[in-house]
Image 1 (tube, rainbow, N blue to C red):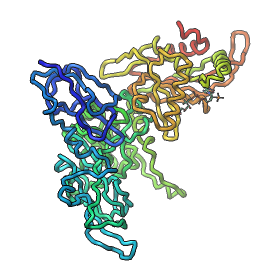
Image 2 (image 1 turned 180 degrees about the vertical axis):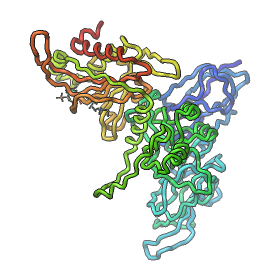
Image 3 (image 1 turned 120 degrees about the horizontal axis):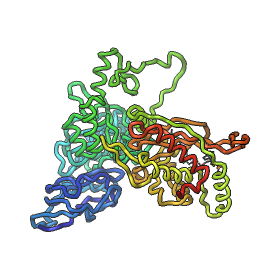
Image 4 (image 1 turned 120 degrees about the vertical axis):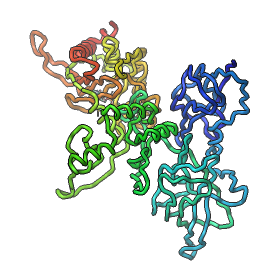
Amino acid sequence: MALIEIKVPDIGDFSDVSVIELLVKPGDAVKQEQSLITVESDKASMEIPCSASGVVRELKVKLGDKVHEGSVLLMLETSVQHDPSSSAPVAASLLSAVSTVSTSPVPTSASKTGTSLGSHVTSSNLKGGSGAQKRVEVKIPDIGDFKDVSVIELLAKTGDRIEVDQSLITIESDKASMEIPSSHAGVLMELKVKIGDKVNIGDLLAVLQSSENVSQETSAPLSAPVMAQSSLGSPSPLGASFEASASLQTYPEASPLPVPLHQPANPLTAGGKTPHASPSVRKFARELAVPLDELTGSGPKGRITHEDVQSFTRSVMLGDAATKAQQSKSGASQSGLGSGSGVGSGAALGLIAWPVVDFAKFGPIERKPMSRIKKISGANLHRNWVMIPHVTNHDDADITELEAFRVSTNKENEKSGVKVTMLAFLIKACVACLKKFPEFNSSLDGEDLVYKSYYNIGFAADTPNGLMVPVLKNADSKGVLQISQEMGELAKKAREGKLSPTEMTGATFTISSLGGIGGRYFNPIINAPEVSILGVCKSSTQPVWNGKEFAPRLMLPLSLSWDHRVIDGASAARFNAHLGQILSDFRRVLL
Ligand code: CAO
């Protein structure tokens, strides 16, 4: 028996890529070449395989870590003598095809033989004159060890103006996916492949009409394929900050692609969207015929995980969910109408179909696609609203003294640049309540309740990209000043679209404050798998009876939504009452 280090193999030009998925855990027996982790850059997602067989003793990386060639992934107990140099990791071989990104020419078998496989100018002059238009054939470049790889996404359409290195299609093997860029600029005359086609090096991919000065003799540099952009790098919207929060589904905004009738629809992309999932998850979904584009990913940035596929399958089997195909069958049999605008037919719930209205009949209209964040958060909020039996308790807290204290503290601290916000006090007060009422800091897992001993508070932030939920970690160990400062930084990052996945995941409770804007009360939707959420509105001075007279008090409206499967009404009322007591006398936070 020997304990050996398993390291990240040569991953080409990719350095400091994030670990987005752990595929094994200590105690697991793994085989050589079995995938251990999935890593992702802003352009690429790939699985890193094991270079030996054995039993995992210790994982040396965790989600969110950055790794590069040579980083130790895990300690493996192996019975055979391991020669690291003999390992031929799949990632390395895959990356031989993708390690050079598009700016530099890729040494390929084609260039060795002097033939450009990336492009071929077949007719010299379409229009004549100095602005000569040439017909350029773009071919599949050297894609390393890939053979018969499936086209899973078309990224351009006829008539599109294509730039050099612009991705034309995405292809996928069972280990990695990559985008194939164009070797030339021009107008796309014809895409020669369709979804589901298998392609190989040298296959004709597209025909461009190019005005570039391309010579048939000059072998144009081959554009290297780049790993598929499986995450769009956008921050997580509300309803998406699941553990692994961000339960958003990050799809490229490609328009739905027609699936030819003579071909069986690809169950993964039946809706025409390319779901964000690692190759092994896609394969798993294919085996079960799970339509990935109908799933909401619970991984960072909405990545669909193995567990998401399992849980979707379980829900379908139990009759708790239905695929769109099932819905449209049952919807058609019920009403004969289509499901309309992508809002879901409601057939799975036994509801009548969504009305199809020609709005233009009643006046001028403008049709705009919903933003990606809205679509993503909408799907999550819809699921949470439908699946969770919400109840909301409304209450008021007297914050007269607290607000006076906050204002005076800010005056004293004016020079420090840190502004103490009401939300920071609320976070601290909520942590005290979560400690007193632990079920509010729990999650449902099957028939178990998972009680968390950490207090990570998500807060809704309104940003130009849409609603985001940054997560303030370990709020119990931080003071109000530190919370204010960190919140300010997180809110700034959210507005700039710079939040990292770890800054949007792991919340145990969320606060949605509209206090700076206005309103009295609202029903916040629980950010599952959390079980409660606090909505806060604008404080206002109200006449409050103090036993002798009405006195002007600054009252803060609170709206606590809770999951009735986990929490009952009495606990919710106690939670709100306790929160109100703390806010009216903040010394209670120490008790
Ligand atoms: N009552 C009255 N005034 C309040 C208040 C409250 N409950 N909460 C904050 N304010 C005031 C602040 O005192 C501040 O006033 P001054 O500038 O005069 O000091 C002003 O409102 C702005 O507050 P802020 O933005 O500095 O800080 P914040 O802590 O209230 O909010 C953040 C931070 C990120 C939560 C906020 O910017 C935001 O994005 N809120 C929107 C959240 C949202 O959209 N929720 C809905 C989700 S469901 O769709």
